[in-house]
Amino acid sequence: MIEIYIRRHGRRLYGLCRTLCTSPQDAEDLYQETWLKVLAHLEQYDPAQEFEPWLTRICVNTYRSTLRRLARSPIWNRFSTGEEKDAFLAAVPAEGEAGPEEYADLHQAIDRLPDKLRTAVILFYFRDMDVASAAQALGIPPGTLKSRLNHARKRLKEALEHEANLPF
Image (tube, rainbow, N blue to C red):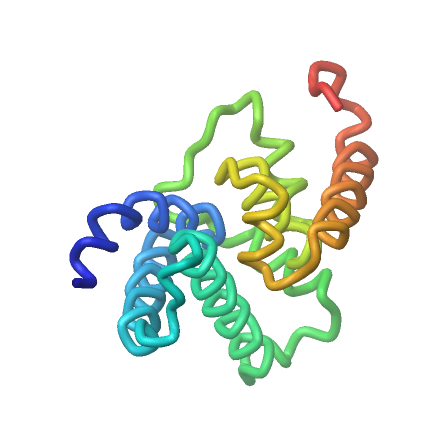
């Protein structure tokens, strides 16, 4: 039965994993972990509801758990501030990461957003989810998602003030 879901939603899920993670290896790990959790909790899925928001929520929660685990890691705890961690991550090139040059500043600015804002932007703008689906996937009310998107747009506009060709 899981094979049907993987065929139907696997490609889109992998795209979400690649968008959330900085490296292809991390994306593949997240993809596998998500399907393992889906398999383990498939009996909790309500067939009356759409599958994709449920799957997306599992993926986002798995991603967040990974970030929390990294934050507790002794390696990460050696950094005194979040800025030091970000500077370290920016200095390490991600394998196979090459996007269109014209959007490089935008993608970097999105990567610097706090996780809550970044995840909202990714689901709404890059995964083409509507407000209701993205809010359901994140387990938040639609109004909260709209607020996060608005806050993210303001931060991105400030970060990209020097870019004249980006429409806001």
